[in-house]
Image (tube, rainbow, N blue to C red):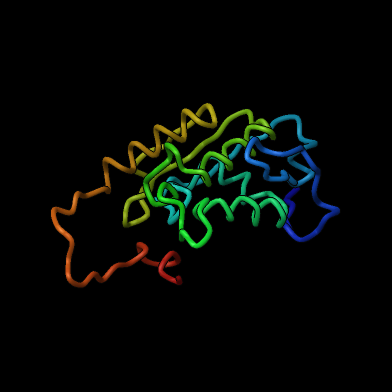
Length: 171
């Protein structure tokens, strides 16, 4: 049976408590009631969560809207008017408040196993990372960083950038 998740439908959600940073964790009831949860996803750079994959299958993937909004507020600086948090950026996990909150929420659900992958520009599989929620995801993030990150020796006067092609380039 396939169930389409609706983050706005309270009847689909179960409350698991709050993360250490105070995010109320509402998760799809089918996942909460399941005997085993296996998460899948792609490890890609993410604008403010560091990387996709891993814990993002739970938050935002199967979370309620209140949970998603509370987590995404963590992108903001703790200083009013301070813009974004300095660690909430692509390729950064350590000290990233968005990532850490997502991981705390995912651990509350307690997935049994994850299978994450890294894709090449042509859609081919470059790597598959399976196992523990945090450990397998971290291995995938290290792989993606080594495969795709480049050092920029100096700031440019003009930058033209792409989010990586369809469908990421919609925004």
